[in-house]
Image (cartoon, helix red, strand yellow):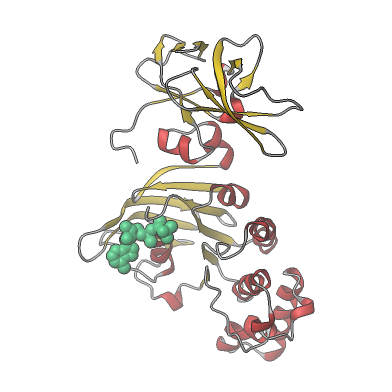
Length: 344
Ligand code: ATP
């Protein structure tokens, strides 16, 4: 393991427990995203890894076997990228990228060579001589990333690095960022509250809730096999179906659905993309609203269950408002989960 975190907890003065004891191992070259709602402790965990915050006594942080728990921030050799780019506005792109290397007192030729490399990889050649103040937000963000890559950090920590950008640019840059991190082979930890961003960039996602790790897994594993209602809702917006489970049957107001296995005492969840309009389906529902979203229609349904139910419907035609439709849901698309005691 490249990074080994054991028993990392944080109680702030005044008694706020931002982080309950947390364990996490990250492999060399892995990109891990910390994902969760506001206030769940993502930034606190990242700042502890960076050395900007001290964990409660008993914590252990090892990097490539070396105990860095009490090492000061400058000795950890981690790179950091924050939401605010923290660039020098009057200095050129090239000077900003080379700044950290100059501070490290690398030979001039070496600095030039490394700046050339990252400028090419980050596609910043046309802007090299421009001052930061003459760049767009997206270009500034790329410079901030290039500057973080230039010293070849052992570990790169990114705190919501794309959140200052507009939606279209965010999507473009997140794909570029994923590619760049892999090209540089950098081990990276990336904080975000945006589910799509976490899934698009990370090899593994750490879902956090109320200072705890709710589940760790690949994006596919979290989507297909969430272990708790919180994770099911947070990753892919699973909706509770309500009703009653008897054996492998889910009895709802509008009909009976079949489950993969008996799941008495559990709660059934489904995602809108798995609810199908199907003339032979076992469930009856009324169409409440129809919203056309280009690639699909989003249809709100009533009467199928006691909970609000949505269906994402692809096709040239959508049902009409008020119409009664029949629905089916494949047994493997119904998630049956234990309710949490202290649900987030
Ligand atoms: P966001 O997405 O809003 O940035 P986050 O998941 O990164 O949230 P943290 O910033 O880690 O959350 O905060 C976790 C909890 O710790 C919050 O309740 C926050 O108010 C509290 N907290 C953070 N920093 C401090 C501090 N310096 N002193 C006291 N409490 C703090």
